[in-house]
Length: 395
Ligand code: PLP
Image (cartoon, rainbow, N blue to C red):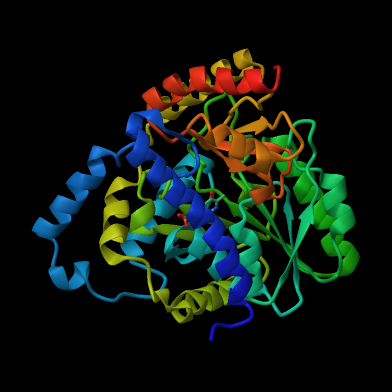
């Protein structure tokens, strides 16, 4: 008999699985190239050559006892130093190995951070629409996710509403930049505004409020915008980073947490987070991948591939009459559903072999998300189908 906590998760996951299975069935029936599957955020760009070369070199040259063994739960010192140096060079920060903990992707970075800071009943704020797992992650530690309603003008965070939602129980605010599912990028002014509001609330309630910055899409930016490094703006920042998207390594489960010296009782937090990583059962991040990252800290994502896909879709969909946010980063396009019921619209689109995710799955009803980490041909060939779909709604 499964636990009460798991029951709703099983029910919800069967909906997602049903969508996945439906896509597979459609592809078997109509052919891969006749199905336009924009449902999953699984990168379609192979990992950079450096990754393969690093794997081969490590297996060839390194001591297998090191390559496959346990290490410090925070990860190899060499890997953490290489990442710290990389961040310092890019962002003029002053991190060293001790500020980093290697973890099993951004999902794990968030879980370890939340386990480290949450007591039962503590509140964690985030802005709608948001990556749905946040609710599950917070619930893992008996916290309560408080959702700040979306600002449908431009989908930038509504900082006043965030401020109004903060209570003495607020332990953290999670932001995601570049953003899944809207594809927007928050610039310095937004981060400064959030930082000022949190500082004010910390003073008012005499509490510590962490700003958890979930940034697996940090490098995936297609417009002239800079993704600020948030530790420079707010002391109690925790960065959750992953190589899943930037280096197309989602199955390898590798990422890290940054805990700056300036954070409240930083050393204690680092020690606790290292233990949280261990007792989560992950113990440490995959050793081979840590060694790969040490050699590939400067490897770059294929930004051009995603930029082109985003442009093809944005142009085609807006010409077809759909209202879309212009993609700025990550690899998602956020489109207004022509009817209020986004789930109905997603069902209708399936008749044209188009698969999208309803915005209500991200607490963003009335919209749909298209993940354009697919082939260029899928984007190009989908446009005719979208035009047919648009006609149904007299767009
Ligand atoms: N955060 C956001 C916003 C995501 O979109 C994802 C994955 O899609 C994750 C976290 C989890 O990433 P990872 O595969 O690194 O655990």
